[in-house]
Image (tube, rainbow, N blue to C red; front, side, top):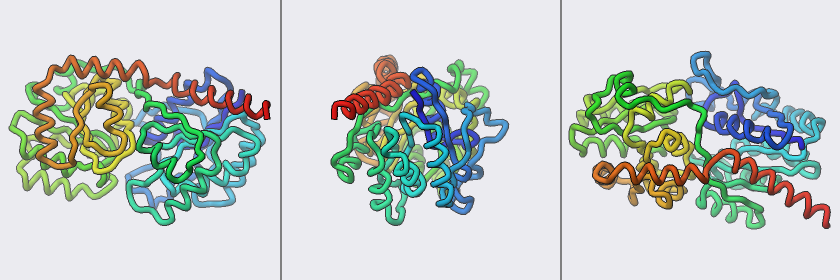
Length: 378
């Protein structure tokens, strides 16, 4: 069996590339896999961070891939389709997280639709920020696929709304087990210069408006002095707004700032130092951050948006805050520390048994085999 995977891979950085690298490693068990990635992912003017590319100190997971697709050059769409067609894959996988990529990905998929089994792994359908012609672009992309892998009921609802005939599989977001082992908590806190006796909250990942860091900072202003917040991630918006909250609420002694891209090798440090990971999101689908937290046996407190509750409530791995409001979030944080930690850890073990990369990869192969059998019988 031949599998082509067209998405973000090394040398690009970030959660999408990490997800794809993990899945490719497990698809190798089922056949030959060839990865194709972007020659240009975003034009520099549209990219909000410092760099789209990994730096030597990032020490990422390297997947060998062919850099060919240019997101804004239509000629590259046909060149990519021609190259993948010559490879003659049985399955072509793409990952979708914003309408910006619909023209490039859909054009390639359309060219191969009669020849391959096209699988779309859907992170988001509705973009977190407004995007022109989003619905039209989504429809164009969705129409070119035979199977959709979704990781939350929220995304599933959006999919069915736009594409009612969609053939889909709902699979939990796998855990990221590629960041190494947990570090002893006191050692991790010492490395980050955090008081060992504090109740440590972690806000991790790219900082964007919809992720609600402002809500969390206001909640921290309500909490007693023993609570300490670690903010670790690169801003995709101006950090000035959050800095003002820190100053105006006198939070300087209650916050540790690591406002930059966090390399893969540093990840265990932050998740090992924390008592709980906080996702105060204003909107969401599912979250890869939850997958990292659970890998380090770290419970999660999240707001009740998108599919976050599906990753937490059925397993008892943390607390869902029903309203995205500072006081409610502060109360949930206090309640979290009043409950036995062992119960959350039991829930994480339950989630781990279901959410793994091997199962995710096997579902794609299983659906392809159904498709092939049905095609033969017709």
